[in-house]
Length: 414
Image 1 (cartoon, helix red, strand yellow):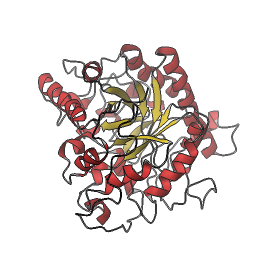
Image 2: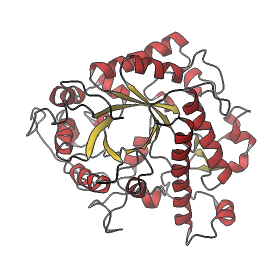
Image 3: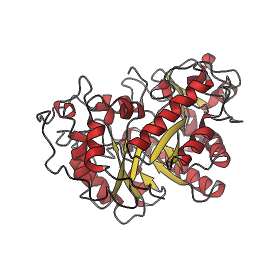
Image 4: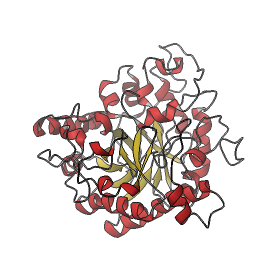
């Protein structure tokens, strides 16, 4: 994957799929503003990814003033498109985009891990977002340490260097071991430092818990399982409990640290296929988050452990393996009556991109998504991946969404 993005991992796990084809000039069947387009409260978000400089900064080593200018440009673009929330990745690889006492400055800022960039990106993002009427959700990746497998490339002061027993090498990358209580306590402390320092509107996790499966490789957590897994029927149940504990403990920590700050998670869009579990969706996805990432996202929603969920529904309407319409219905049914707000993660990055199915070459595909999702009252908005694609919009898909659904501003849910 050229950009070390969470989305590429997820989509590469699926088989090559056939797609709906529609003329590029076709308009959606109901190209009218979504009924909540003028509502008082609706999520209109965008992810702003920093891992591997996916969205920002455009490359490492820019001056502080240039980095700041690029960040402000993304915020201004969100305002122009009448979005109201920016989900800013501030801990991409066990590092920090703020002056953390626990972890090093991110290498994606200066090109050198641990090097002070000369300014405070997270502090600036919160201040400037709020000045523009935008919410700022701080996005953390809990367990990813590095997108390479060499601990020697980490800065000597890195906690993973000081505690090599916390680290698992898997699939050419380094991860903290979720099965160790000390690891769970450390990552929670490191993340909550940002919540204590800044009035972020929410804490946000993406889809990486246990890593996506790599054929022929084993995530080596034998010692941790021997030490802590004795009360569970199998390793998978123990791993799910480890992630459940992280979710519950993080939620409690946020409430203690800054009451009123929300907690949301954006899981891979398929919990389980119905062929595996009758409670699952009528899909045939190659990845099931419950089984492969040990992330029981359905339970988090049903038990209201989190304030909002943003399933990554990165398929087109009518996809034969994972139909967008089917998954919107499934997630709406899961969220109904729970108190957990449902927003839909949208694959703007696929619109007009080379190699994507024909449906994604139609600039109206995403607009159709919002029209369809708007028929379910449980769907309270959408988040688009990602900021670079909002800015470039090569197929005009985002412009179509704005014209069809975002003609008037809407405030972000609180």
